[in-house]
Image (cartoon, rainbow, N blue to C red; front, top):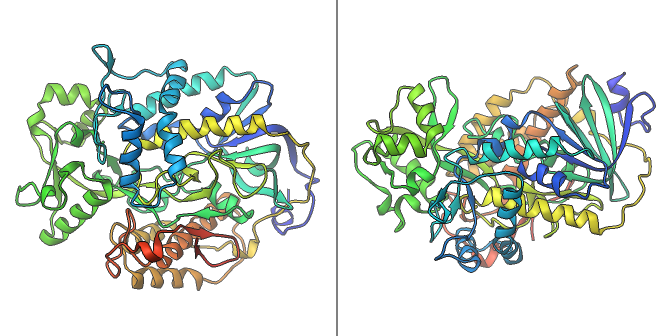
Length: 527
């Protein structure tokens, strides 16, 4: 097939393969699998995943799922904590949905065979940053992996769901502000997946930073495709950095779960002093943005690493409670019961994404989004720890209900809309862009650095396409998302939550207690 014919914007798809489904779900993390499992079995569903579940952010989630099941807890307390950490930008209705439907989400997972550690008659709950109660249900320190494996088994057993792996979604197909499916690259060929409803649950874009706890697969491709198709995006500047990542000898980033600090581990600077209490009253359990900035400042002050100290917890407890972390660190020559472990912040979670209502509906008819790909406003300017797995289940179930409640229009075979091939840039180094993003749009930002990088990206000349279609798209998506992060960060001339600007270090509710909005072909605005 002549790729240039397809990419040139010509109408029709005479030479390609076409399939028709009721619902196409893009992404096989917990959000996407939840949608697939909750949809009525009368729907014919395609579940498209770029990789296997082991590359999804769900699989890498260690801590657990926040849910108010403790005897001293309530949905109201969970709401208060979420709003506080969100720094004035949370959508209160979304937060209420999240907390009040938490028990139902937990029951859903239990029905799928998911287990959580128990203590006596209840769950063995832990506490993480920003929580006023022990609220995080977990399965040792690999909760996300356990959930993903159980849901994968259930999805595989569903006769109405066709799981298509190693399938890269290139474009969301639209006409007259309605979505009709997507174009994907699968098994060496282009395939159109026509659909009555399309769900983007493909995760976030924190993986485009050089230092990230995510897989490089977390590159925001679904968000970028929806944006090109006309879907409105929101809050793209808000990227959460996890305070405690470990840089492996090979240059990789390994997450040290926040539950370690929840169980009593502390942070020490190069002099061996515990320092977090001088930055925040909650010490090591301050919100993640506060801890990340404190670590960054301490590192610069001494020009030396900051360390996580869990030695006082003892080998027996650490090796049992934190099986994955303990074993992995031991493989690198660090033993939690006797060693201080060097840590530093790394990009972890993208709060921005496809703007949706409380039922996952985007600005385009028949296009839905949930999980990290969406922006419901539930996290505000900073996500409360372990709210992400809960969000994926709560809003994944809501998307399924919304699809079932809407009339299913017949698929109309429309002319296709593609990325302008002149926007595909050849020879750009994505890894170098990730390093530049770390420097300009990392834990501490400033307008001059962001403007300089954004200007340089926009000045790169357009060139002819490379032969590798997937490289074309992955490169274009990465640069597109980087530009959106920078443009939104420049527009927000204040510091709030995960977005801290050294040139505007104060929060400004009068001007900026609003959301950044991105629309294709327009400058980022505040609304």
